[in-house]
Length: 80
Image (tube, rainbow, N blue to C red; front, side):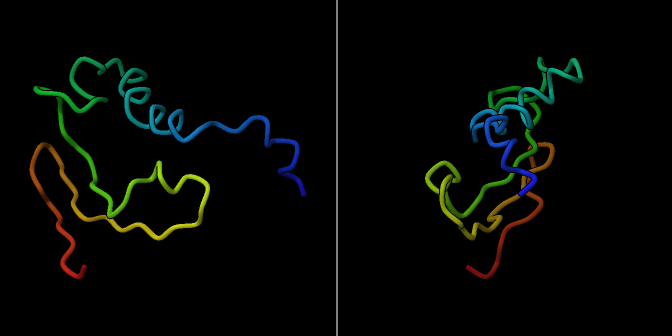
């Protein structure tokens, strides 16, 4: 298949998470106000039903349990 040659170009799960969080904030020159979970930082995040790091090499079915935007809960899963 076409993707076989790209296997050595893959990123790890930790690298992908960093790219979408602190890396994205850095690219916007906003790393002082977002990109990490810390007091005083902007808080937009989701809480998942499981730990994606535990499931890295398996197929899995995670659900979004809670969504937080601007530090406020805007969604909570009802059917658990």
